[in-house]
Amino acid sequence: MATAAYPGGDLIREGIDDLGQRLETIPALLVSIGAPRLSRLGITVPTPVPSPEHRLYELLHREDPATAHSRYNALIRRLVSFERAAECAS
Image (cartoon, rainbow, N blue to C red; front, side, top):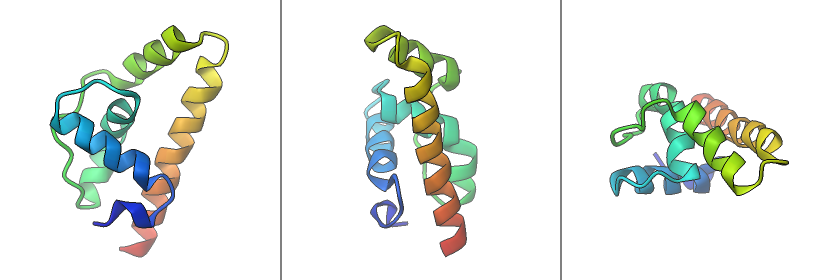
């Protein structure tokens, strides 16, 4: 699937690439959160990170505690937007 064709696709592609390199980045954690749904869409997700929701929030909190909550929610919205667009196209 061409991830770039959908909203947030750049972030999803980066997360898949990071997971393939076993990196624990914001995109990798986001893809790990969406792994079950992404897999059902036919997107190969390398080994997802365990407990990605908590780890993503902790990483965002370490970067900037004041904006962690809003950034977390914005990232989840981007993931859901991508998933919905990909579902509509399939």
